[in-house]
Image 1 (cartoon, rainbow, N blue to C red):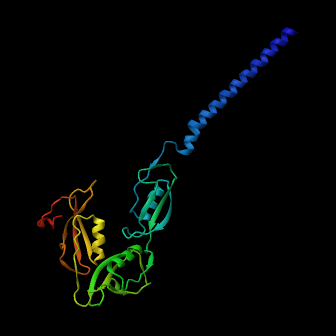
Image 2 (tube, rainbow, N blue to C red):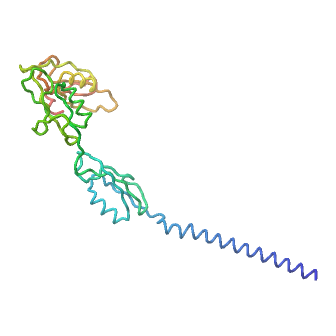
Length: 264
């Protein structure tokens, strides 16, 4: 009786160990199947799509492309005068990124109509002051029209030949022409000497004298501190209000000949 009990006990323990080993083996097999077969299959493991550069493209083109590649998109709106209406201005993820199928691509689309701003009142403001106000309101300064007027300040604002009224709604980014007084006698200013000055300092001085600025960069100015190496009209010459002063910017000590003006 004692011998039979010992055999039964050994058989029972052996059976339990065998069942435990079988259970562990099954769990391991299920784990391997889940991580290396089932999970990659439902997540398209290893299958990615390269996001193309869609900036500048019409949202209609983008929508068709994304649909063909099982991608989604979400759009908001912004505005840039440099792109046509409904063009993509920005995207995320960036072009070249690797994404899974059904990934959502975020895009910013250019509005059909530009947003509007209120035309600031520039009457009786100097040219340099008017330019600063226009820039602050995301507007551009156009040409300057000189007229007989006792003060060298803005007399009127125009948009494509039409006189504007203060607080009138206009498209953001519009180019505003300024009608400026010529003091009734074709008044002129003395062109300041900005030779050797930095671009910002030179612009500040010239604009402060109710003159405009055009800049030409001469040579390679990377990793340098470029300065004005030539100006036209020259220092001390007389110039009408609003007239352009051409500045050539380059490395200190760079020389430029008169016959190079047109080539630079």
